[in-house]
Image 1 (cartoon, rainbow, N blue to C red):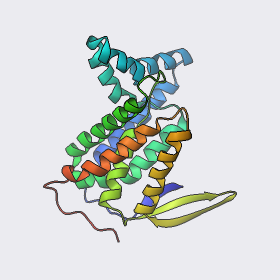
Image 2 (image 1 turned 45 degrees about the vertical axis):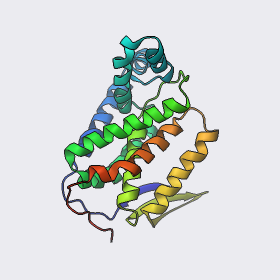
Image 3 (image 1 turned 30 degrees about the vertical axis):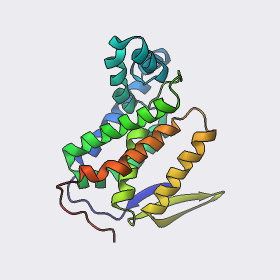
Length: 224
């Protein structure tokens, strides 16, 4: 299922969402133009590596600030065109309404906090992993959790692949995002090489905390 658009109009221009998308794309293009050796070095330096984070916690506290920084720098690195395209598509469709709901500055905090919560969740479940964690998926998952709570009945135009058939349907956000979340839970037990628990942690964080970020904001628009 690939979401294409929703039916919730914006009250303000989603400048932060657009900036985040542009920065991710610029970093991806910049990294893609590097020689392979330089790309590997970039990932080694700026990706979050749970095992190194654990070493910093237990043995090398002087390295803790650097490892904390990699939680956020890793959110702007991606492993391939499909990786970044999927993350940015979801952010573009769902992030604009969340930014609209909480405000521009709060959205920066919410997005970063979602990425932090996602990384900590993955670290908790696999602290000894030496595989670099990269991608905006955890932070974007927080946006999806927030959208599920704020706009459960929004209509999402979705591209669906059924074997060799391709069609588009409109479905409630609660259906699309619940299915998405259940898929993350299922793959967390069988899938390898993807930080599934980061997706789960970010989603739960967004779902649980988004109301705090909307305090004092104008009432939300209802889905039509």
